[in-house]
Image (cartoon, rainbow over all chains, first blue to last red; front, side):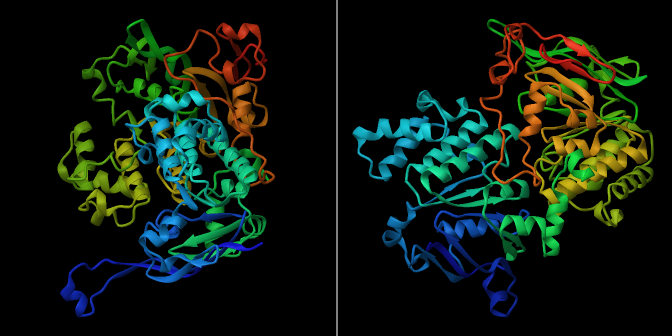
Amino acid sequence: MSALLELDNISKTYELERRLLPRMFGASRPLHAVKNVSLRLERGGVLGLVGESGCGKSTLAQIIMRLERETTGTIRFDGTDITALEGSALQPFRRRFQMVFQDSTASINPRKTVRRTLGESLQLADVPKSECERAIADLLEQVGLDRSFAARYPHQLSGGQRQRVAIARALAMKPELLVADEPVSSLDVSLQAQILRLLIQLRKRLGLTMIFISHDLALVHHLCDDVAVMQAGSIVEQGAPADVLRHPQHEYTRKLLAAVPKGPAERAA
Amino acid sequence: MALLEIEDLHVGYPTVTGVAELVRGLRFTVDAGEAVGLVGESGSGKSQTALAILQLLRPPVRILKGTIRFDGQDLASADERMMRPLRGSAISMVFQDALSGLNPAFTIGQQLTDVITAHRRCSRAEAIRIAVDALGMVGIREPESRLAQYPHQFSGGMRQRVLIAMAIACRPKLLIADEPTTALDVTVQAQIVELLADLRERLGLALLFITHNLDLMSQVCGRAVVLYGGMLMEEAPVSALFATPRHPYTRALLACVPRLSDAPGAINSIEGSPPVAGRLGPGCPFVPRCALQVVQCAERPPERVGASRRVACWRAEA
């Protein structure tokens, strides 16, 4: 196996002091959102990125997606240093990694039908117009929706169905890497389980490589074969879920594990 | 005697063809000092039930039928004049979204003392003393100095604590917490839940804890009421509900909670979509997703009442 994605010493610093003069006199207030993160993701692997809000996991995802620029460090995607690329040189790579956002209500245009939303992505993926309708039906089937959903608007869908459409839109590009940022945290338990099962299926069927961002360790345990725990911008612990979740080494991982709600049976155990 | 008694509650709104019911014939009680969990997915009617208790339903949604008895008074037919002294005093509520629960333009101190002076005849100094006391009780350090701060100076978890302080400042008999931790991180969620359990014990208040997270509910509550499509599915002591769920929906819901103790990848889900409120037939709302359905399910299932539990299913024994 070869590494699909390699992060080498990625850091992201925001400058909180906006005024130039104080900055020149040394009154800078840097915020280290991501600090020296190095990760390696094998083709076909699923990496779980865990941590509390504000720990930098979403910033890291945005840097990988090239929505945000790193301050220092390099990212190699399939062997190519994509941090050195810009504009049209980056374009062919962009379609190879796609993202699913947490809030499906905000990430899907409410004024477009599912058909148009998916159709636009397919067009960008160079699918000829004549084949679009079939491709849309295929995509909907992939994510477990009936093809009649193509005619609906986002408000006519439930939260779980909307998230499925968001996943279908990401899949339209036939990506190699799917980054899912808290894709189920705004859903009910029964729908959470549905989406999680869908992601597991898609991974098997399409051989997707995934980064799954979550604060729910139980979800990560089910889906991922590698877990990285982030705290204040750094990765404090990394390894196979069985090791990290059963024998946590770092204090912070233990704290996260202790906070996971437990049923009566688990508390007794 | 029960502190809160809800009897045959119907909540809904009129439509062109009749009425759309969001809560359909719900019955349950909360004893003084007891913690009851109201569990269900979105659209199950749990929040509407809470709003109905406080008469905060947003028109055109209203109570269609039924009684809500609180401490001897009937709230279902109460008017605004009767409700105002109760809200925030005898019954108070903590909402899901801690950010919009506080006014960003006023200090925490002003907002807290507003609640206190609205319900008690006391001096400003006395109100401040009560506010400080309430903030201390919810675990905010140096409460005196934080009174002058604005909501944006508090983190999400701290804001939720302030709202809880506001809710308990007047020593309510019943605290309704509607998904109080949904917007919070796991670690903060654990703290807030611990705080609620602790307050219930210290102040002897009754707690109605509304959530879709069964495990979380089990950490605070002694008894649970499971709702689906506006109807009661099952009511049981929490330990019994987890050990021997009787209703197919409860069983399915419990099975799809992801746990660290499961084998990786072994996830059960309930296929199909949750019901759309107001578009349900007279029968059991869970039928389209139920594996055990029989012909009778098209009719409303009777509530089978056992020693400590109730189940509304044709196929279940109480």
